Length: 345
Image (tube, rainbow, N blue to C red; front, side, top):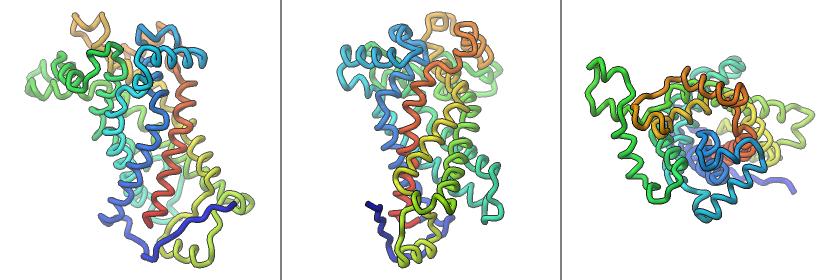
């Protein structure tokens, strides 16, 4: 059975207009929320593995361990334990995904104003810059989410408690010791602990993700694949599509494959930075730092990881990452592209 997609009768909406920005933001926010809800249990287990939580370290390194960890959480905390910290995830992911897709559309229109400018590096640059914009705005919420997922004692699992804990931790910035910034601002900087590797990881992650997705779209729209991969449109629907300057919509299976493969490629490229970021985010909770008030730098964290497990330590939980990221990115791009179509952009 062929997919049927309806169109409205309005003309094209200018890409730089507020109406386009709002609509693309809504489409992006909804797509991100759907994708994160789909893989929330895997996300929590992955964080526990990445941060070497002492209660779950014995399960890391295999898919069998993933199942055991899920059973352990289910036994200890019930089904809600698998979604611990998810409310913060949703509060973060809607503005994050909205900003990411809005920024991508706007930056892409600047770097690629017409077809003749459509090159691989411009696509990758558009994705990387959009990722940087979104991560800067929503990073504090991501840090709170990771802390909530890391804590295993129920009486400590409260958003207010975690926020106070982060704020009152010794400020890790050197600008405070030199008197360049006030104390209160330095403590607010605690909410950006691990931000640098996030930025470094976002460059390949978002860049590769958007590039791979668009590249696979091009492949599926080649003449010999188009009859099978593109949604058939009537003459009237195609006329409306051209009028609105909308892309040809892919069939469900093709869109999901494009998103899934894009997720695998981006996860592989950025995973070592994600490992370092997670360790930095919970470094103040470790015994050696809790009383010494010392905070590891990125090179120190990297050396610790390498000393513990060698180069494989930078890819701990990657198999779970693939299981998580493939449906997540596939769902995200699928919902976003469909929402764009229904919203007429």
